[in-house]
Every structure is written in C-alpha cells, then in structure tokens.
Image (tube, rainbow, N blue to C red; front, side, top):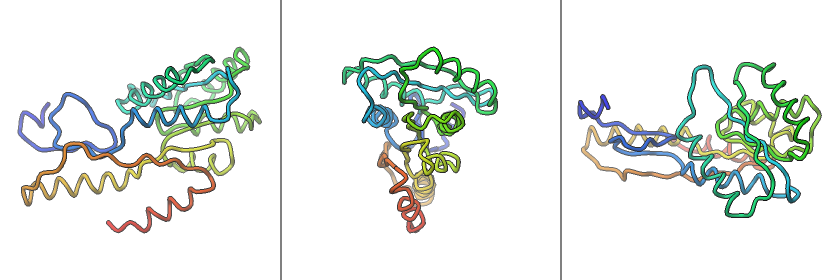
Amino acid sequence: GVLDAKHIPYIYVDADIAGLNRMAYYGTDSYQGGRLGARLLLARLPEQSDLLVAKIRHRGSVASTQGANRRRGFVSYLQEHGFGGRMHEVELHLSDAEHNRKVLDSLMADCPDIRGAVTFNSSCHILGEYFRQSGNEAMRVVGYDLTERNVKLLNEGYVQCLIAQHPELQGYCGVKALSRHLLLDEKVPSVNLFPIDVLFKENISYYHNLSNLISI
C-alpha cells in the first residue's frame, strides 16, 4: 500500500501476496508445493492411515500466505485421490518444547492410526525431533526448506524428504531484476516460477553442490 502510493517498484520473493501492485514475483507455486507434499506423504502409507498436520506458530506470528496455499494444495490432493483416513490438525509453538510434547503425546495416544506427518513451513524439525525422542522410526514426515535442523533429521531418517526451492537464487534474481529495471528500464515477467525440488538423504549432498556451483 505505502509503496504503491509512492510509485516505488518492489518485488516479492518466496511468497506471493495477491491484491498488491508488485512488479514481479520470484518463487515457487506454493499451491502445487502443497499437492506435492501430499503425494510424497501418502506414498507407501497403508490405506486408511491417519495424517498429522502441524501448524507451527512463531511468537506473535500469523499464518503465512505461502503456508495457507500449501495447505489448500495438500487438501485438494487428498480429496482428489480418495484419501480415506482422517487429518488431525494441531497447533505447536516454535519455542515451547514442553507444550509441543504434551500436545503430541495426547494426540498420538488418542489417534494410534497416524502414520504420516507434515508441516507447511520450515519447522518440520519439531516433528522429526519429537518422533526421534519417542523412538518412532516408522512415522513418515515430510517438510519444507533446508534449514540446518531439518537437514540433520533428514540424514538421520526421522524426516523422509524435504521440499526445497533455492531461496538464495530467488533472492538474487529478484534483486537483479529490480536493479536492471531501475538502471536500464528493463521489464520482467510478473510471475517467475522456480522448480520445486524433492530431496532425500541420498541426493541432498548433490543439491548443496549445485548451490555452490551457481555463479551469482
């Protein structure tokens, strides 16, 4: 609103917000990212398995546009593919391990058919760490983003796969486009979508190598 009123160009990176006059968006299709998360989570799960969906709050935060879009895509995939189990949603807190343990202990005791779990932000390490501490090696956990803790649990086997998107390259392309617009009056497409990458412990090291090889 303020930038629009002052006719200052701006670019969104990682998450797009509808209804504003941004010059361009660099990132992934978060709705399709949610559908992909559902597909990966359901793979190899027994029929009629229940799912845990964790909404992980940062202190004072509200749900992100990206997370909401991922959830919509996730649910749409379940509906289209005849998901026959139940989806249990809980709210966890980023910095309150005791609260999280109590909530998850209660849920797992009440819902023993839960076989898969997902978060729609970068905090799936909270789920992976809980299942590591409880000794539940059979739980299938899918998460987003290559934070250090997420990658550690991926390599240990308590997160089965991570969905990634090269955020550093998104940021670089966004700054480059804005600079060239201001200096050279170049126009760029309004929507610039990046690949959605699926990483397992067997291929994550090569993904890091690719990041190092990209010259920016």
